[in-house]
Length: 415
Picture (cartoon, rainbow, N blue to C red):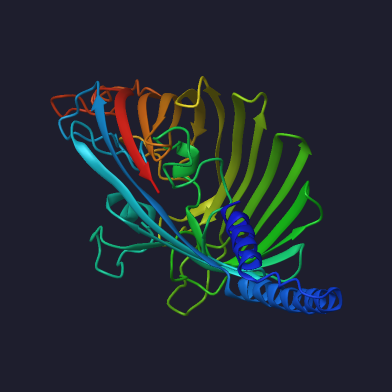
């Protein structure tokens, strides 16, 4: 909309800048008017063409920070539990910096390019596949979150190349976009980003299909010669109702000593839907089923196809322009141990999570204030000698808790 307003303003100001002519004799006036009209038409057409070729540049971003109080009072002040119970909001009992984003975009009629750079602790966590970043491992100084260009080959077909955020899942890495501040286990255990090429064809405003080829998941450098296949089918069955069917199939195994890639797969089928039920009520859902076989980027070899999956439901209600409230319930099942969500013994586990989030929008929409309560309940270990092998740490440093509740406050400034 801003681009359209700018174009209209430029055209309008250009129109006002031309003289309308001086009325003299009727014949002279007609000649002048006709001549000026031609000059104006040519000049306006030239201006429009130059504007389309020149395009527009935008700069945006955000910064977020948070405080999380953990009711277990873990001695380590960590929300992670045994293995990766949280994605980004990992610290408790301290005010923590999240992520700083700087996003630059240039667009014209036929193409656009996006350079999306991230800084801070969450930048490193979001690029965990790259053990050595541009400025050193763990520098929290710079990460390439996205860097890609689009070529609009026609009004229906668009090609994209570079590094881009994943199409899998309901939630995204950017804190201002998600309603809840803490991210789901579905997000944590799915892809974050891809490097590759893709094409999207819009059959109509209601149906489009994306197909692409990518390197291995969440890594700037591929670990084998195989390429992953990605796809997304978008359908808009009715006004306010969007449906996405997402897919990825990739061989993530590292090459052996002879340069051969072992048989392996990382596969995810993902379903996302959103329904704007009323002007104030938004309903969303996400379900994913994944499986892995063989090695995953140098990890343990799974000899058989090993499943994992989960489902989440979302509700948010806008009570006013300044305040809204929302909830997320999620069940995630990794009992087979395919993904990184494991228990204290290193075995697979499952979790039920409930998150309640408020959202205050102030400072003309630039500042988001999000108080949030989250509770995670894991499968309790009941075997002999396992009382101290539960999922979460207590105030004495012993793992005696199978559930964790946190109460936090996130501050997000976007521009």
